Every structure is written in C-alpha cells, then in structure tokens.
Length: 246
Image (cartoon, helix red, strand yellow):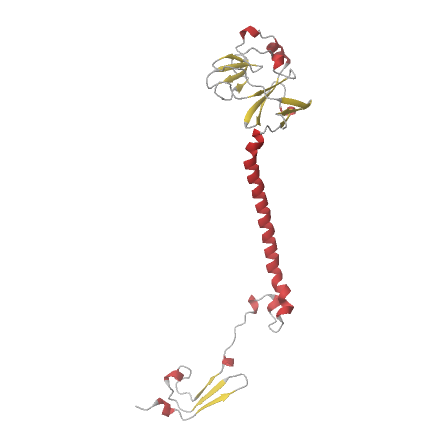
C-alpha cells in the first residue's frame, strides 16, 4: 500500500502579510486530513481565512454602531442613551408604584386607629331631605341622620314619659328639633333597625322585634335602652360634625 505522504509531489506553504496560507498540491491523491478541503481530481486548493465571507449584521445594529471604524469613545453616549433612558423610566415607575402601595397600606392599617381615636365625620345635611333618613358611617358604626317633619317633632315632644321604658324627653335627645342623630345599632344585640317602620313610626329592628319611636326611644320589644345619641355639633346650618376631635 503506497504511503500517502509519498504521493504528495510538492507542498509549498507561503506566508502572507495577512497570515493567509496557500497550499499547492500537484497530486490528486491527498492525505485524509486534506481530502476534506479539496475536490476529487483537483491539483490545488487555498487555505486562507480571507476566503470566508463575514456575515453582514448592519440591519441589526444601531445607527451609532454601524461604523466599525469609529472609536468607542465617539459612540458611547448614543449607545448608552437608550439604556439610561429605559433605566430612568423604569426606576421612576417603580418608585411611584412603591409610593402608592405604601400609602394604601398605611391608610388601610391606620384607618382602625383613626376610628378608635374618635375621628370626626362631616355630613352634608343637604343629602337628607325633609321626611327622610340618611345612614352614614362613623367609627365603623352606622349613624342615622333623620330630617324630621313638623308633625314628627310635635308628636315626639308630646309623648308621656310614664309610658317609656327608658324615659327621656325628645328635647334632651336633639340639638335642633328637625334633626335627629342616632347610632343605628339596636341596643339589644346590635342589629340595624329599619327606618320609618314599626308601630311608632320611628325604627323597627327585625331581628327580635324592638320598636323605637321618632326620637329613637324604645317603646316595645326586648331592647333595654333607647338608641344612643353620639357626640356631635353643627358646623353651620347645613353641616354636622359627628364625633369629637382629639
């Protein structure tokens, strides 16, 4: 069997300035390591890195980086501007989101403490027309604000104290006759009565059948006391403040 090395008649390596190497082979018989680079029957082939076409990535490059001969210092600002801008916008959005979430958390956790401290609730009396009853929230409890008619005022003022379970005159329970302000929970078990219901035209608790009159006084049923009157004051003729500022 012939030695493949003896079949190479001439092998000349020529070094070029760009370090390319040319290989001239005069025999069609090649060593196994070179046969991959030459076509069958060829007498010569070229081994140079300059033969390889480098892909064009210009379509993927930013405009500031398309000039491959430009110095890095000359393109630094345009290249990093988008990154800095994205980082700044992202940081601002994150900070704003954190602020909103923090305020919501503090407000959620702080609300019970504010209520327990006796926060003042301001109520616009224009929201309650004459002959109607409005329900508002104060310290986590519903509050009735009733705009009484002259007929209701007269009726409650003339009630005989001897028939009351928890005797209290109407004028002791109101600051202005036309405005009745009460804590809504029933004094029996804390249910919320229905306004303008019951046998006395005041409030009726459907849980156990307690009847209150138009002054919030217990008249019939298991409730032991009148509906409680909260501490309040009139800011002006159309505004009432429920509670006391600490």
